[in-house]
Length: 300
Image (cartoon, rainbow, N blue to C red; front, side):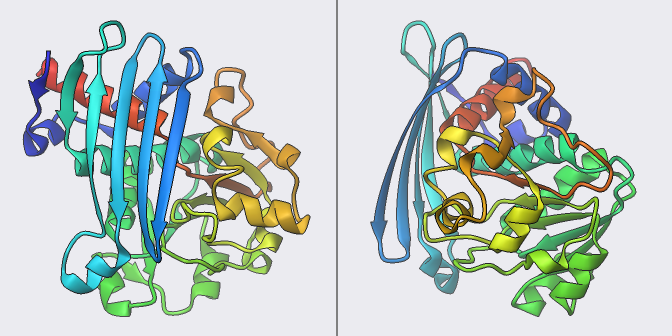
């Protein structure tokens, strides 16, 4: 049965803890079948992502990413999310694209940080000042209520609008942080591995194309690398593809993905270890998020 979910009302029913628990439960089910289609037109991208998880359901999500919309005063991403019943294939819900994307993206990196960042982390640096950056501040605060946030962005005025501290010097801010979250549209590294300090955790969100990356080879070679899904990152995103191609890392250097949580492999090994988690945001995570939203709405 197709239900209508009111985004503004549904969001009041959600919690970051509830979503990360849904992610853990979803990854305990049979491995998702995932299919991605990418179409490119210059800087624009169409992503058609589908997933089916036996015992949960199926989802098709289409996203149009148009960076030029920022200059038009429009959102850079538009799309649609269709959630289908696992048994009958019936359309269960049309779930708001922006709602699913916001919670999926931030919840993905929050789950990674909950396993990899040191519990005593206090200084959080956000690189980028877009919608994802704002969501990450809210998500991190759910686990680290005493966290202090600093934002660095190429446009200082955008960083100032975030309502937290503004970093003037990116290198100094990186060196001082316990947790670094990068959510930019960079096609070349903005964070240098030589800046990283023992014990830091990095959540990398921005890169989603083969020609995009946010950290350099040195950072990747110095860190223990984790991904949300091997299937949607290793051969799809420049953040992983480029250092493999250069020889800085190999595929075997990817320590774990979320399907390894149950086995206890998605974890840091020591307080001094530098950890990097690449957020690839596959359709299976959209499916888990959309189902979480649907259940919250149905049980309201």
